[in-house]
Length: 410
Image (cartoon, rainbow, N blue to C red; front, side):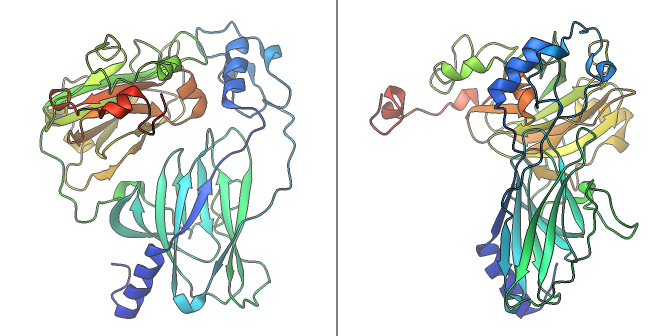
């Protein structure tokens, strides 16, 4: 409970009904297609950081050519002076709701509002038991909703968005501006330009305590288990969700799998997971260390369609056929009572050893849905597959969509 005062509750309901959307993105003058061309030409997994040949020569794929990188993509970044967003608030309303959406292609950011703690009340569109934090960390594709109490001296307070990955030191800013504000002495930050806390008193959002509000826990066991091995696949820039194939984005140009769930593409076990309706499914995402994967960054994996519970994580190789078997040996690695319920899941960054996460969901929305890494270059490089949910209860596609897009166009 954030506050049980009836007036405050009414104010929070008003704020939630009229949220301020804070869309966070990382702009680049090069398009994703141009990044793909540069990565293929140089055989490098490109990030906007000074090029270190040892760091970018990933394991056995060492036939790299940095000269093929276009100028300004990897180095020589030039700052711009763009406009700054201002979110206007009225202290008489007592509360404001901020909906943070990460539309970043490669950056992972820390967010804070100077002198205004955040009551985080929803994650990926799911209500949680509210948690108070000064900062929150957003990976690509994640969404967080937060209540902010408007109880400071009316004035201007800086909203800070800082990249917290080692690839580039960069921040963006906006302003939370009170109506009739007079405070202009400069607000006191929780984080610095690099996204680091300015003091030990700063409290970050605890990602392990994102407990769903008024949601039942997942089933005690699953009906089926799929183990995916995430990593590079034959080149520095090429990625796979299952260590068997890299998803080819030209699949998007073919007839949708929704139209023909028994086509060759829909039945390809290298590109698809096929499930039965009204069953519980576990997906284990294993991130390995190998000659071709001496290290891997976090992979923010996004699941389309309904949400899933993050039920477990651990270090090492998942050497089990199911979560039930694993729980007999490593029960401390699982949480079925207060598991978070969301549609974005971040695998651990690995440098010295493998690691894994486990999600569980109930199949209740038959159709073809994407499972993919939300880092743009990893998605372009093939880190994706299709979940064919509920193949035994496949929906009937309306004829107008089979012939076109439902609007009369063919």
